[in-house]
Image (cartoon, rainbow over all chains, first blue to last red; front, side, top):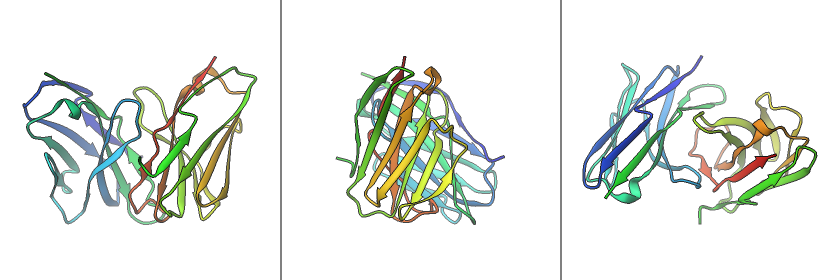
Length: 113
Length: 114
């Protein structure tokens, strides 16, 4: 069964600090991995997408990495801001067939001033 | 504005009521989806429509009934729901079916069943 596990479940950091969120998956065969940001009471918004051949992708202060061999991904946030407070969801899609994505439970990030 | 609009944003209903959730996408996409998001659980896929044809029904109870009259509109009709159906219901669209493309989500409809 395809699974996506995220850690930590929640994280509290001070404004300006960096943090790294983890995602481990068992989805196979692999197609792509996305990170979504979901603000409280809003829908998820895509931050990055990576395919098998990519191991780093940046979007402003967000940098995602992918190790397809160990089936791990991380999302690094640099110089955090209050607006980074949100849930970050890792989503992995399998190739072939319907590409149905598997969602992680998300990491809840709170940035304090 | 996300390009995917959901109404109502909040809904409270009794177990004997009948209500509907509406989703409209302004992106010219061909596929639309309903997802359920419960606290501390991953998003659960409910239904997928591609070019107005239902292509996925993920073992959803019959008290949830989807309708896709055209490629821009998607409804979720609700009747005789249970308290455990209380959740955030998210609509999404993508350029093509098969999930290969990015999912664009609406803001969600927060449903409370009393």
